Image (cartoon, rainbow, N blue to C red; front, side, top):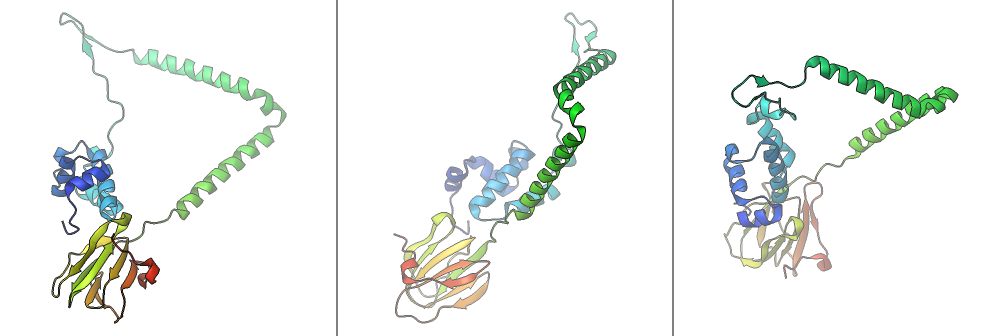
Length: 248
């Protein structure tokens, strides 16, 4: 609501039905398909709004997900069927039969493995062991390096404006979304608080106070349009005249 985004826009962008988006907003978890879908929807919805999806999913797990839902069984226990005519229930194979089949299957698999690797193992068992160990170490190192190098998503910045006189504003958010589409704001008119990972803004003059993460930032006087790039990491960076967004 603060970003003035309609549910239909989010529905088209995320492919999540509007009734599920409203259920997420109202925390009506019983209207959603299940905990797995809830977490997936939360991540997708948060990304579309420029929020931290990981934090929302963690909050859902802590406060709303039951232990039985967090570990849902993959295979259900088969039920016994009753014979036609109301006789005794028809049970599945006995435990002894299943154990025997498992043992026979294991022996067959072992024989196949021995036949497939017997020649190479008898000639150079040390080399085979060393190669396997090296491969395992390389795989573990690659996994740990990939995990350590995974970049974190950029932090979200909050931005609002309060003009002291009439001022032209063009404000662009994430995914080139026009948050303020090149219009004139009047003196004393406060905008909504917008959230994005990266803002681009053009101001027609300096008659405005910018609130970046709640902190007021003045705009220096200028005889021409002024523009900034705003992120959490780098703060407010001035733009060259050729870099100013136009909202056209």
